Amino acid sequence: MPHQQRTTEVDAYIFIKENLKTLGWDTRNPARNPQGQVYTQNECLSHSEIQNFLGQERPENIVKITESVFWVIEAKREHNQLQQALAKAEEYTRKINQSRNIRVKIISGVAGNQADSYLIRSRYFDGNSFIPIKLNDVEVSGLLSPTEVDRIIRENNANIRDVPINDKLFFSKADKINEILHLGAVNPHQRASVMSALLLSLLDDTPPNIDAAPSVLTSDINARAERILRNQGKPEFIDYIKLNLPATEDNHLKFKNALVKTLQELNNLNIRSAMNSGTDVLGRFYEVFIKYANWAQDLGIVLTPRHITQFAAEVMNISLQDIVYDPCCGTGGFLVAAFDSVKRNFTENQIEKFKPNCLFGVEQDASIASLAIVNMIFRGDGKNNIVEGNCFSKFLSPHTRNSIRTARFTNSQSDSPPITKVLMNPPFALKSSDEKEYKFIDHALKQMENGGILFSVLPYSCLIKVGKYLIWRKRLLNENTLLSVITFPADLFYRKGSGGVCTVGIFVRKGIPHPSEQNVLWIRVLNDGFVKSKGKRLPSSRVPNDLERIKDITKAFLTNPRFDVENVEEFQKATKIDFSDPDLELVPEVYLDEKPITQQEISQRIEQLIRDNIAFQVKFENILRRHK
Image 1: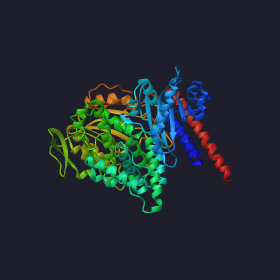
Image 2 (image 1 turned 120 degrees about the vertical axis):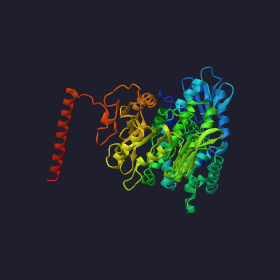
Image 3 (image 1 turned 60 degrees about the vertical axis):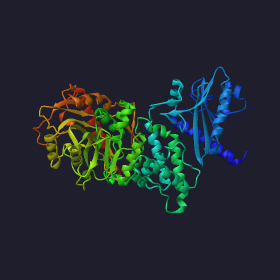
Image 4 (image 1 turned 90 degrees about the horizontal axis):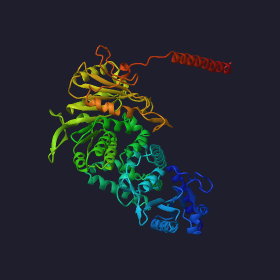
């Protein structure tokens, strides 16, 4: 066997086992480790039933799903041998399945090598036919996780839907892709756009030709992205996501390799399937890429975590009659959440009418707006009303299209504003900026009909500062009704260079002066089900999720402020605003009842203070000794 052949086979072994391990499989040899799940080549012959029917033949890997159910993986060294790999895996399966004791139910073909990347296709054997495996109606492009395999086997179905997204895996892949693009000399502020172009190129049934020369591959990806944007009525945004080869020809190959490796990582994630789920997967990637982009920080852009956008959309109870607006939509997180909320609750025909008529967004940065548009295209809505520009120069007027009530952008304020729901997170104001956060809220309220509900994320300071902020709070209450204020966890938002920004979420009903006797729902969320790990916040079952706990209460209270709310000390309370407060502080911590302190807590605090004092003395005594 030629040396190159042996090398590429070793590459395939490493690739397959690394991916299986990343996905959660125990890649140890089952013959040597009771918990092991992956045989590699000759190892499978230690299983008497497999050896009995394969003889001396062996695939690259056999995965033990259960004691009696297996998954065969066969690899070939060239992309054009993918069908051969699948055919060989089928052959192995038919031989093994002559056994009365074990069955192969899943096969995969892997074709490629480390230099050229890998193509993967998988099939489910129902006893008669080998059926392409799909997640969320899209054929998988990577290997499968234990959870996915379990559902396929349990449901006896090659197409499973609503598979939970592994947040930790997606964030780690996003970091890896960021490093790949960094090594490929892609500027930080271009990486999210490169990701958008690559994802659009994967929408076709046939993938880009990664074996082509750098210039050909780049042109192919651009042509695919442009065609999709043109078909969706957004051709003007191609310039913001179009790939450009480096100026120096020496870097062309490096750039191409970065694209190919990124496509490989996306395929490993079964990205097209994931994008078809109810999770804002692309938003998760954007969070990572924009974190590294200084220009985003300079603009005050801090992306709203996707579980916050989902929470807001759900409690706002968005219906088919609503027209939703985000005047500073960023990468489209709130609009995606609003659209997904409607998709879960209404029929396909109703959704088809909603999506082109009821979602509106403005984003001041054209490149960020292009990311939002790509995100919405992947949600099944390319004909959305997201525009680039200064939201203060954009106004919305009522409009009718095909007998459906909608809105349209105009150059002047309408006397009959059409928006019924606003979800927003205005740019956190920079010290040198005159565009304070509350000005975005004022502008959004002007686009709303009376009785509409606005949700906005705000820095905590906006609701306690005096001066202009106090004047704004008084005006807000003189013209509108404050329904609820929720304090979010302290580390929910992170802004490079200034650390965490404490935030709140406010719900406001437009156009009805706040009744002095009306209760406001005050809530203090300390835990949102996430923990910080290596600079990222990841979901964890080890911490409570207060957002889930308050979801139904908040939704009910927004509909009926007379709703009876249990008073939970230091957590939630429904009570009226103290208008006698000269500073008019509108934060939960002012209104929530404190827990009475016990004698045991007093003793524990005193003991802790004593320990801290002793530790302080020891520390500085040692420092003083070292400086003598």
